[in-house]
Image 1 (cartoon, rainbow, N blue to C red):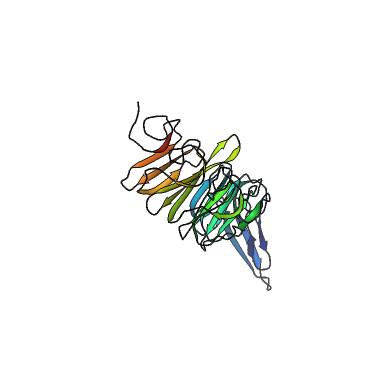
Image 2 (cartoon, rainbow, N blue to C red; image 1 turned 120 degrees about the horizontal axis):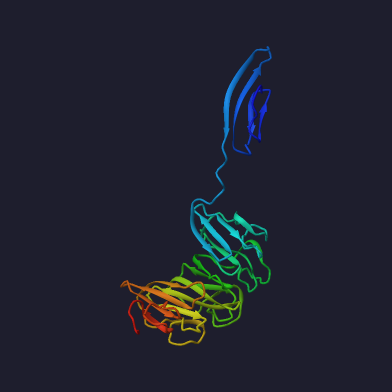
Length: 327
């Protein structure tokens, strides 16, 4: 090279005039290059070479994003899962316990169709109907038959095939799967009967929620009461438009007219044509149902008018949103 300087990271091969390498900074160089062949015939080339910075790394083609407050997960259209944030229990799923300020790929997942997460653990549903989990595992919430041994890479939840949906809630230590046959299975912590199998015993493998058939949707929410991450209430929508609930019930969020916890599903009072359900998710002790006629019912805690019925009184049975029952 006669005059000029190549951008940093690039080199000129003097025998054939080839420039190789990857630029490490953005720069424009004016170059004069003289090439001489074996007969001592010279050719001079003058050119301008511009190196532009690469686009910053980022997530594209994301179809689902969820966050547990300190760790966030993204599911891409190619079936891969990415995570960033806190990682003390390996909940980023990349084989480390190092926090990451940028997305890292969850190891080994290539055909995920859904993701969910709870307090330190995360889950992916794959195209083949299996469920995989990673992160914290104090109460068996990874579902692989072990407890008190976190995993920084995904492990398969034992025995689940034909899963069509998964759910967990931010403060919880349990998880749920809806299967093609309309049954619901749960695993992990069970202090308030949230596994729905008639006990309050934790389970490190999935157990069937008692008596549920024809379920079409499942959701859950957990009340964070001063670090108690087990006050969980879960809900299932059935094909006949009725709703079942089980678990924690201090504020009447089971919707059956009581405030007594239940370790098996109870029918939410008065709902016969529900088409969708949702729980508050972040521990606010209430749930909502959308009915076929387009109206909404709500029940549970109502400290800040969340039930939408004109009061701040908790309701142990569903009330219609928008129909006031007080000043």
